[in-house]
Length: 366
Image 1 (cartoon, one colour):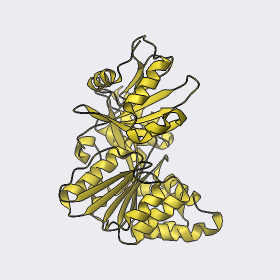
Image 2 (tube, one colour):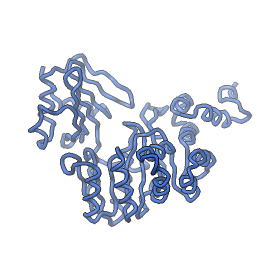
Image 3 (cartoon, helix red, strand yellow):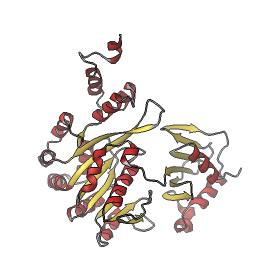
Image 4 (cartoon, helix red, strand yellow):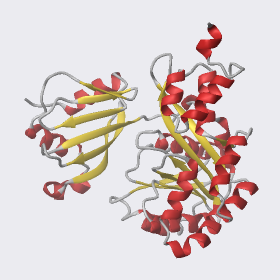
């Protein structure tokens, strides 16, 4: 058969798929509202894989098409959507994953994110991390924050991404966007040259190694506001992950340095809503207040989480607090709150306490 990738992507867009999986020797699949659905019975053939690669691969890579085993790039169907594409060689000779990137950048309100996050766009320097698993909406949140700056401040914003996903058109700010491998060698090199391009705000797609981390921190220390991402499962674990990039003998000094420049860590996950099954964000927020900074500098990481649990302010919230808030508002179910919580005993106690006298909702109804 001859597989028409554009036609399939257009149909997938109408089905509101977030991800499209094209595997050699298998039928295509879609991810819709967090779940995978196999589409039809037609098998993708080896010839189709080669045709899709030749059609979608940017010209910059075409000369080494036979050598490619793993690659990320952007493909666009005008008037439909942009797609972040990953192609990899696997045991079936090839697989594509297309991630949908909408043209329009949604606001924090439209995304269902806490309004407080807007405060992070008001800083003139420092570094903010958005963390979470793959597919948790980190890039979408970053795009929304960058767009707030773009619409409201006269700044120069530079993004260094792998690859460039959301496109920001100049508004009050001017925006320079660079893609790894096509426009710049790596994140460290991108930051180095960005510092010579008169930036105010920088987006560094991901912290993957020590060199990128230290370069991003240096940029934040020299009068720039930096946003970046990490793959972690919580705010406190994100701090520990950053610490882990540094050799043990230098970790104490690094933590003091980090505490002085970091503005906040936002951890997010997407959970199914009770109404239509669509995914909504749950967020854990750790803003570096003077107390948090003091704890970090003195290595009191356990006390940081205890502080978060006691907090009543929107700038410091645990994931359980966020899940419980979604449950109270009847956006997610009790089972969802418990399933996605990493502190299930505490989550259960919060839900029981909601009904008084330590009884559950079911018991109170009876």
